[in-house]
Image 1: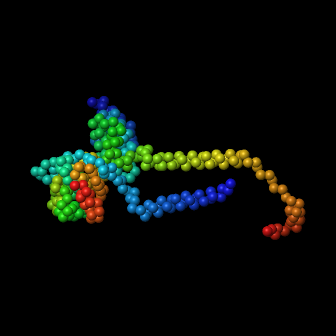
Image 2: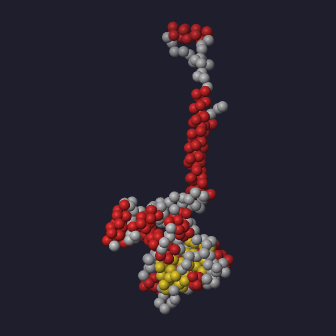
Image 3: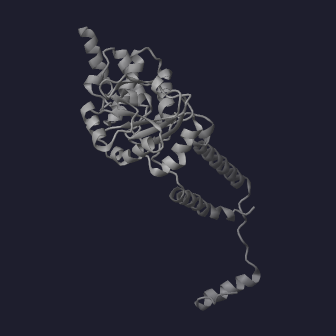
Length: 161
Length: 178
Protein backbone atom coordinates (compact mmCIF):
# COMPACT_ATOMS: atom_id res chain seq x y z
CA UNK A 1 0.00 0.00 0.00
CA UNK A 2 2.79 2.33 0.93
CA UNK A 3 4.62 1.41 -2.26
CA UNK A 4 1.50 2.26 -4.25
CA UNK A 5 1.21 5.66 -2.63
CA UNK A 6 4.85 6.35 -3.43
CA UNK A 7 4.30 5.34 -7.04
CA UNK A 8 1.28 7.60 -7.23
CA UNK A 9 3.34 10.47 -5.86
CA UNK A 10 6.02 9.71 -8.43
CA UNK A 11 3.42 9.76 -11.21
CA UNK A 12 2.14 13.09 -9.96
CA UNK A 13 5.66 14.55 -9.94
CA UNK A 14 6.43 13.13 -13.36
CA UNK A 15 3.77 15.33 -14.95
CA UNK A 16 4.66 18.88 -13.88
CA UNK A 17 2.48 20.40 -16.61
CA UNK A 18 -0.69 19.30 -14.86
CA UNK A 19 -0.89 22.31 -12.59
CA UNK A 20 -4.61 22.30 -12.01
CA UNK A 21 -5.11 18.70 -10.94
CA UNK A 22 -5.82 18.68 -7.23
CA UNK A 23 -4.29 16.08 -4.91
CA UNK A 24 -7.74 14.69 -4.06
CA UNK A 25 -8.36 13.88 -7.73
CA UNK A 26 -5.26 11.73 -8.17
CA UNK A 27 -5.98 8.03 -8.64
CA UNK A 28 -4.28 5.50 -6.38
CA UNK A 29 -3.36 3.36 -9.40
CA UNK A 30 -0.32 5.17 -10.88
CA UNK A 31 -0.71 3.55 -14.31
CA UNK A 32 -4.29 4.81 -14.60
CA UNK A 33 -3.23 8.23 -13.33
CA UNK A 34 -0.58 8.47 -16.04
CA UNK A 35 -3.20 7.61 -18.67
CA UNK A 36 -5.63 10.13 -17.14
CA UNK A 37 -2.94 12.85 -17.37
CA UNK A 38 -2.17 12.00 -20.99
CA UNK A 39 -5.86 12.21 -21.90
CA UNK A 40 -6.37 15.34 -19.80
CA UNK A 41 -3.66 17.17 -21.72
CA UNK A 42 -5.47 16.59 -25.04
CA UNK A 43 -9.03 17.40 -23.98
CA UNK A 44 -10.21 20.98 -24.20
CA UNK A 45 -11.91 22.66 -21.27
CA UNK A 46 -15.30 23.68 -22.71
CA UNK A 47 -15.45 27.10 -21.09
CA UNK A 48 -11.87 28.30 -21.61
CA UNK A 49 -11.53 28.39 -25.43
CA UNK A 50 -8.08 26.83 -25.73
CA UNK A 51 -6.90 25.30 -22.50
CA UNK A 52 -6.55 21.62 -21.70
CA UNK A 53 -8.65 20.31 -18.81
CA UNK A 54 -5.40 19.37 -17.07
CA UNK A 55 -4.29 23.03 -17.09
CA UNK A 56 -7.58 24.65 -16.19
CA UNK A 57 -8.88 25.49 -12.75
CA UNK A 58 -12.42 25.96 -14.11
CA UNK A 59 -15.00 23.90 -12.25
CA UNK A 60 -16.26 22.17 -15.36
CA UNK A 61 -12.66 21.21 -16.22
CA UNK A 62 -12.36 19.55 -12.82
CA UNK A 63 -15.62 17.71 -13.40
CA UNK A 64 -14.33 16.55 -16.79
CA UNK A 65 -11.08 15.31 -15.22
CA UNK A 66 -13.15 13.39 -12.73
CA UNK A 67 -15.30 11.91 -15.52
CA UNK A 68 -12.14 10.79 -17.38
CA UNK A 69 -10.86 9.06 -14.23
CA UNK A 70 -14.22 7.42 -13.58
CA UNK A 71 -14.25 5.99 -17.10
CA UNK A 72 -10.67 4.70 -16.70
CA UNK A 73 -11.42 3.12 -13.33
CA UNK A 74 -14.50 1.51 -14.89
CA UNK A 75 -12.12 -0.19 -17.34
CA UNK A 76 -12.56 1.95 -20.47
CA UNK A 77 -9.76 2.04 -23.04
CA UNK A 78 -8.32 5.45 -24.02
CA UNK A 79 -10.31 5.57 -27.31
CA UNK A 80 -13.48 4.76 -25.34
CA UNK A 81 -12.81 7.70 -23.01
CA UNK A 82 -12.33 10.03 -25.99
CA UNK A 83 -15.52 8.66 -27.57
CA UNK A 84 -17.39 9.33 -24.32
CA UNK A 85 -16.30 12.97 -24.33
CA UNK A 86 -16.84 13.52 -28.08
CA UNK A 87 -20.37 12.07 -27.83
CA UNK A 88 -21.20 14.76 -25.26
CA UNK A 89 -19.15 17.77 -26.30
CA UNK A 90 -18.40 17.12 -29.99
CA UNK A 91 -15.04 17.35 -31.74
CA UNK A 92 -14.61 20.72 -30.03
CA UNK A 93 -13.44 18.88 -26.94
CA UNK A 94 -10.39 17.50 -28.78
CA UNK A 95 -7.43 19.90 -28.79
CA UNK A 96 -6.11 18.06 -31.85
CA UNK A 97 -8.85 18.06 -34.48
CA UNK A 98 -9.51 14.68 -36.13
CA UNK A 99 -8.65 14.21 -39.81
CA UNK A 100 -11.96 13.98 -41.68
CA UNK A 101 -13.93 15.53 -44.54
CA UNK A 102 -14.58 18.78 -42.70
CA UNK A 103 -10.98 19.30 -41.61
CA UNK A 104 -8.81 18.09 -44.52
CA UNK A 105 -8.24 21.66 -45.69
CA UNK A 106 -7.04 22.53 -42.20
CA UNK A 107 -4.58 19.64 -42.13
CA UNK A 108 -3.41 19.75 -45.77
CA UNK A 109 -3.68 23.48 -46.54
CA UNK A 110 -0.37 24.63 -45.12
CA UNK A 111 1.70 21.67 -46.50
CA UNK A 112 0.03 22.20 -49.91
CA UNK A 113 1.01 25.89 -50.00
CA UNK A 114 4.55 24.93 -48.97
CA UNK A 115 4.74 22.31 -51.75
CA UNK A 116 3.48 24.75 -54.41
CA UNK A 117 6.04 27.36 -53.29
CA UNK A 118 8.85 24.78 -53.35
CA UNK A 119 7.96 23.65 -56.90
CA UNK A 120 7.72 27.27 -58.10
CA UNK A 121 11.12 28.10 -56.60
CA UNK A 122 12.69 25.01 -58.13
CA UNK A 123 11.28 25.74 -61.60
CA UNK A 124 12.40 29.38 -61.44
CA UNK A 125 15.91 28.40 -60.33
CA UNK A 126 16.26 25.88 -63.15
CA UNK A 127 15.01 28.31 -65.77
CA UNK A 128 17.54 30.91 -64.62
CA UNK A 129 20.38 28.38 -64.71
CA UNK A 130 19.55 27.26 -68.26
CA UNK A 131 19.05 30.62 -69.98
CA UNK A 132 22.42 32.12 -71.09
CA UNK A 133 23.57 35.29 -69.44
CA UNK A 134 22.58 38.24 -71.63
CA UNK A 135 25.49 39.60 -73.74
CA UNK A 136 26.90 42.94 -72.66
CA UNK A 137 25.17 45.69 -74.66
CA UNK A 138 27.25 47.07 -77.43
CA UNK A 139 27.22 50.80 -78.28
CA UNK A 140 26.70 51.95 -81.82
CA UNK A 141 29.19 54.32 -83.46
CA UNK A 142 26.83 57.29 -83.03
CA UNK A 143 26.44 56.55 -79.33
CA UNK A 144 30.19 56.21 -78.90
CA UNK A 145 30.75 59.63 -80.44
CA UNK A 146 28.13 61.19 -78.20
CA UNK A 147 29.73 59.70 -75.06
CA UNK A 148 33.12 61.06 -76.14
CA UNK A 149 31.75 64.56 -76.76
CA UNK A 150 29.88 64.61 -73.46
CA UNK A 151 32.96 63.54 -71.54
CA UNK A 152 34.99 66.22 -73.30
CA UNK A 153 32.46 69.01 -72.61
CA UNK A 154 32.07 68.14 -68.91
CA UNK A 155 28.36 69.11 -69.00
CA UNK A 156 25.45 67.07 -67.73
CA UNK A 157 23.81 65.34 -70.67
CA UNK A 158 20.50 66.68 -71.87
CA UNK A 159 17.89 63.95 -71.37
CA UNK A 160 17.42 62.11 -74.60
CA UNK A 161 13.99 61.19 -75.79
CA UNK B 1 6.37 34.74 -70.08
CA UNK B 2 5.50 37.82 -68.12
CA UNK B 3 5.60 37.53 -64.32
CA UNK B 4 4.04 40.92 -63.79
CA UNK B 5 0.85 39.31 -62.40
CA UNK B 6 2.92 38.20 -59.39
CA UNK B 7 2.86 41.79 -58.14
CA UNK B 8 -0.89 41.36 -57.55
CA UNK B 9 -0.31 38.51 -55.08
CA UNK B 10 0.00 40.70 -51.94
CA UNK B 11 -3.17 42.53 -52.97
CA UNK B 12 -4.98 39.24 -53.50
CA UNK B 13 -3.83 38.03 -50.07
CA UNK B 14 -5.12 41.25 -48.51
CA UNK B 15 -8.42 40.71 -50.32
CA UNK B 16 -8.81 37.19 -48.92
CA UNK B 17 -8.00 38.28 -45.36
CA UNK B 18 -10.29 41.33 -45.58
CA UNK B 19 -13.07 39.13 -46.97
CA UNK B 20 -12.75 36.74 -44.03
CA UNK B 21 -12.84 39.62 -41.54
CA UNK B 22 -15.86 41.15 -43.24
CA UNK B 23 -17.68 37.82 -43.13
CA UNK B 24 -16.75 37.31 -39.46
CA UNK B 25 -18.04 40.75 -38.52
CA UNK B 26 -21.28 40.66 -40.47
CA UNK B 27 -22.47 37.05 -40.28
CA UNK B 28 -24.21 35.58 -37.24
CA UNK B 29 -21.26 33.31 -36.58
CA UNK B 30 -20.38 33.20 -32.87
CA UNK B 31 -16.79 32.05 -32.39
CA UNK B 32 -17.45 31.35 -28.71
CA UNK B 33 -20.25 28.92 -29.53
CA UNK B 34 -19.22 25.31 -29.09
CA UNK B 35 -22.39 23.84 -30.56
CA UNK B 36 -23.95 20.64 -29.31
CA UNK B 37 -23.08 17.05 -30.07
CA UNK B 38 -26.32 15.73 -28.59
CA UNK B 39 -28.89 17.14 -31.02
CA UNK B 40 -30.43 14.32 -33.04
CA UNK B 41 -29.21 11.64 -30.64
CA UNK B 42 -30.86 9.87 -27.71
CA UNK B 43 -30.82 11.89 -24.52
CA UNK B 44 -28.23 10.69 -21.98
CA UNK B 45 -29.61 8.65 -19.12
CA UNK B 46 -31.00 10.60 -16.23
CA UNK B 47 -31.21 9.52 -12.62
CA UNK B 48 -31.39 12.42 -10.21
CA UNK B 49 -32.44 12.51 -6.59
CA UNK B 50 -35.63 14.54 -6.15
CA UNK B 51 -35.33 18.20 -5.20
CA UNK B 52 -38.73 18.39 -3.52
CA UNK B 53 -39.26 16.19 -0.51
CA UNK B 54 -41.55 13.23 -0.91
CA UNK B 55 -41.13 12.95 -4.68
CA UNK B 56 -39.53 10.12 -6.61
CA UNK B 57 -36.21 10.34 -8.42
CA UNK B 58 -36.16 12.02 -11.84
CA UNK B 59 -35.35 9.29 -14.35
CA UNK B 60 -35.58 8.51 -18.05
CA UNK B 61 -39.18 7.47 -17.42
CA UNK B 62 -39.94 11.08 -16.40
CA UNK B 63 -38.93 12.16 -19.92
CA UNK B 64 -40.66 9.60 -22.12
CA UNK B 65 -44.06 9.62 -23.74
CA UNK B 66 -44.30 13.31 -24.64
CA UNK B 67 -41.88 16.03 -25.62
CA UNK B 68 -40.26 17.68 -22.62
CA UNK B 69 -38.06 20.65 -21.85
CA UNK B 70 -35.10 19.83 -19.60
CA UNK B 71 -33.57 22.84 -17.87
CA UNK B 72 -30.39 22.89 -15.77
CA UNK B 73 -30.46 25.78 -13.30
CA UNK B 74 -29.00 27.02 -10.01
CA UNK B 75 -30.10 29.62 -7.52
CA UNK B 76 -26.62 31.17 -7.61
CA UNK B 77 -26.76 31.72 -11.38
CA UNK B 78 -27.90 35.18 -12.51
CA UNK B 79 -28.83 34.26 -16.11
CA UNK B 80 -31.06 31.51 -14.67
CA UNK B 81 -33.03 34.18 -12.87
CA UNK B 82 -33.23 36.09 -16.14
CA UNK B 83 -34.76 33.20 -18.06
CA UNK B 84 -36.99 32.01 -15.23
CA UNK B 85 -40.12 34.02 -16.24
CA UNK B 86 -39.81 32.49 -19.71
CA UNK B 87 -39.81 28.97 -18.24
CA UNK B 88 -42.82 29.93 -16.10
CA UNK B 89 -44.75 31.09 -19.17
CA UNK B 90 -43.68 27.98 -21.08
CA UNK B 91 -45.10 25.75 -18.34
CA UNK B 92 -48.19 27.73 -17.43
CA UNK B 93 -49.40 29.33 -20.64
CA UNK B 94 -48.09 26.85 -23.21
CA UNK B 95 -48.64 23.78 -21.06
CA UNK B 96 -45.16 22.42 -21.75
CA UNK B 97 -43.69 19.74 -19.49
CA UNK B 98 -40.57 21.26 -17.97
CA UNK B 99 -38.07 19.17 -16.01
CA UNK B 100 -35.56 21.02 -13.84
CA UNK B 101 -32.17 19.88 -12.60
CA UNK B 102 -30.58 21.96 -9.84
CA UNK B 103 -26.88 22.08 -10.71
CA UNK B 104 -24.41 22.21 -7.79
CA UNK B 105 -27.08 23.78 -5.64
CA UNK B 106 -28.09 23.11 -2.06
CA UNK B 107 -31.70 21.84 -2.03
CA UNK B 108 -32.74 24.57 0.43
CA UNK B 109 -31.30 27.27 -1.85
CA UNK B 110 -32.90 25.83 -4.98
CA UNK B 111 -36.28 25.52 -3.22
CA UNK B 112 -36.07 29.10 -1.95
CA UNK B 113 -35.27 30.22 -5.53
CA UNK B 114 -38.39 28.44 -6.83
CA UNK B 115 -40.52 29.78 -4.01
CA UNK B 116 -39.46 33.32 -4.81
CA UNK B 117 -39.78 33.18 -8.62
CA UNK B 118 -42.33 30.41 -9.14
CA UNK B 119 -41.88 26.71 -9.87
CA UNK B 120 -42.28 25.71 -13.52
CA UNK B 121 -40.94 22.17 -13.05
CA UNK B 122 -43.16 19.09 -13.29
CA UNK B 123 -40.18 17.06 -12.10
CA UNK B 124 -37.21 18.55 -10.30
CA UNK B 125 -33.96 16.75 -9.55
CA UNK B 126 -30.59 17.42 -7.98
CA UNK B 127 -27.10 17.25 -9.49
CA UNK B 128 -25.05 18.13 -6.39
CA UNK B 129 -21.59 17.44 -7.86
CA UNK B 130 -22.14 18.08 -11.57
CA UNK B 131 -21.90 14.42 -12.62
CA UNK B 132 -25.20 14.43 -14.49
CA UNK B 133 -24.11 17.68 -16.13
CA UNK B 134 -20.99 16.09 -17.67
CA UNK B 135 -23.14 13.22 -18.92
CA UNK B 136 -25.40 15.77 -20.61
CA UNK B 137 -22.53 17.71 -22.20
CA UNK B 138 -23.16 20.76 -20.05
CA UNK B 139 -20.68 23.65 -20.07
CA UNK B 140 -22.45 25.76 -17.43
CA UNK B 141 -25.88 26.89 -16.30
CA UNK B 142 -28.40 27.64 -17.56
CA UNK B 143 -28.72 25.13 -20.37
CA UNK B 144 -31.96 23.91 -21.87
CA UNK B 145 -32.80 20.84 -23.96
CA UNK B 146 -35.93 19.86 -25.85
CA UNK B 147 -36.42 16.09 -25.99
CA UNK B 148 -39.09 14.51 -28.16
CA UNK B 149 -41.51 11.77 -27.12
CA UNK B 150 -39.09 9.05 -28.24
CA UNK B 151 -36.27 10.46 -26.14
CA UNK B 152 -34.26 12.10 -28.96
CA UNK B 153 -32.64 15.47 -28.20
CA UNK B 154 -34.11 18.02 -30.63
CA UNK B 155 -32.71 21.32 -29.31
CA UNK B 156 -29.90 22.31 -26.99
CA UNK B 157 -29.44 25.90 -25.81
CA UNK B 158 -26.31 26.96 -23.98
CA UNK B 159 -27.09 30.05 -21.91
CA UNK B 160 -30.46 31.61 -21.08
CA UNK B 161 -33.33 31.07 -23.49
CA UNK B 162 -35.21 34.08 -24.85
CA UNK B 163 -38.82 34.70 -25.88
CA UNK B 164 -37.61 34.43 -29.46
CA UNK B 165 -36.11 30.99 -28.81
CA UNK B 166 -39.46 29.90 -27.39
CA UNK B 167 -41.47 31.24 -30.33
CA UNK B 168 -39.09 30.27 -33.14
CA UNK B 169 -37.65 26.95 -31.92
CA UNK B 170 -38.97 25.49 -28.69
CA UNK B 171 -42.73 25.61 -29.36
CA UNK B 172 -42.38 24.25 -32.93
CA UNK B 173 -40.08 21.49 -31.64
CA UNK B 174 -42.54 20.57 -28.89
CA UNK B 175 -45.36 20.42 -31.43
CA UNK B 176 -43.33 18.36 -33.90
CA UNK B 177 -42.01 16.01 -31.24
CA UNK B 178 -45.31 14.79 -29.82
